[in-house]
Length: 350
Image (tube, rainbow, N blue to C red):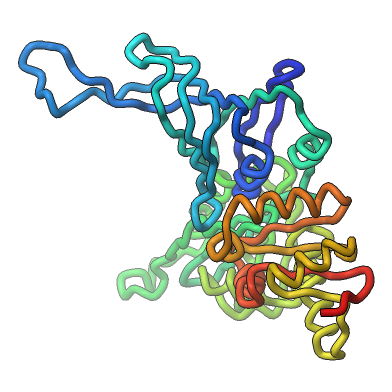
């Protein structure tokens, strides 16, 4: 998330990933003012205009927040409230409206006072860069982007090498050029490129990359042991030990280590972990939580406001909190454990 202080009371945000939407959900409160671009239908007063139709125009409004909620998979944030400012004379103050925010949107948030926890949440940065995953074989290539704990499948490209018309004319270098073109559209500064897949194609592709300007700007790593290309290869990599080795100090790597620690403790019947909201809530009352991981399931199955309030209370005590979604196997694993788990500094009796 890109942030910029406008003045003492207002901060500007540019949403870059799903974690940013969750952060904004935890920061924005009822009574705050949110300013953003939106659209609204304006009734036509012209001759021959249909009374049931209107023109949808783009406007910039400021809302006094009355209700805020995430959607079920964390990729959109809805903010509802009363319009207190508008860039259009056609839109009156005092009218209710809702903003639907997603990745790529920008907004300003104005508060009477920014609390220390608010500032801690919005300034928290993911360690390291993003990772562009390339699962390549002669027949196809899957491209994914891993940022924070969110995996996005960008594209699946097909070489056409298996078609009859290509048996004599197929040129692997031409396919590599197509993949390079796709990479250039998703790579951002400091992103790391990770290449894997069956056979020797991955090495041939890395050699091809080395001849391009991309190699001067991005670190490139080759991973062995992933015997699938395309989208399947990306999901295989996300579940592999190779992922842990490469992404060890990133947010996803740290979460994977926490879950592995919890599984070991469960096997040895240790009580220094929790599963589910009620167990974790009780451990927090004793100040026992060391780190906490939750998925979207906890918000789907419990009152969202209660969960957000709990997360903020936990983090205000200095606990490290990680959010996951169902785009990774690790996220689905946490959902299967009740949507929330934690490691404890000391055991808490049930």
